[in-house]
Image (cartoon, rainbow, N blue to C red; front, side, top):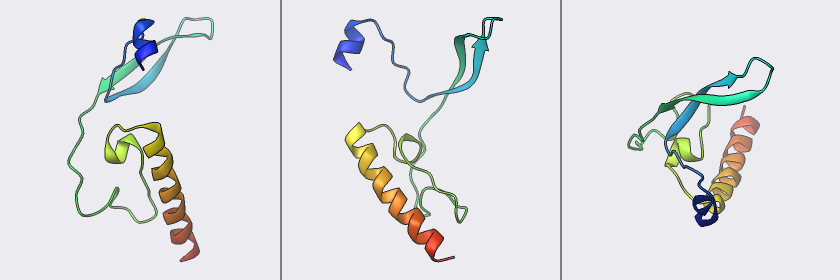
Amino acid sequence: VEHAMEEGIQFHFLTNPTAVENDGNGHACGLTCIKMELGEPDEKGVTSVPGIFAGGDAATGAATVILAMGAGKSAAKSIDEYIKSK
């Protein structure tokens, strides 16, 4: 992150791309984005729909890659258990 900032990279947290802009020649030249806000986690889990799972920044907010990898392993285990129970 420090090196990216030194290179002039701009970080836009809680920003979700909604469209890729095209230069007319089939090349991406920009993004259209919306700004988001984190909500408070609740007791229901990451989604309210059985069989629909969410993880990463969408579920817990921004974190490190190491925490994301751990969350991914945990999610995979939960998804596997859900599928096997059906």
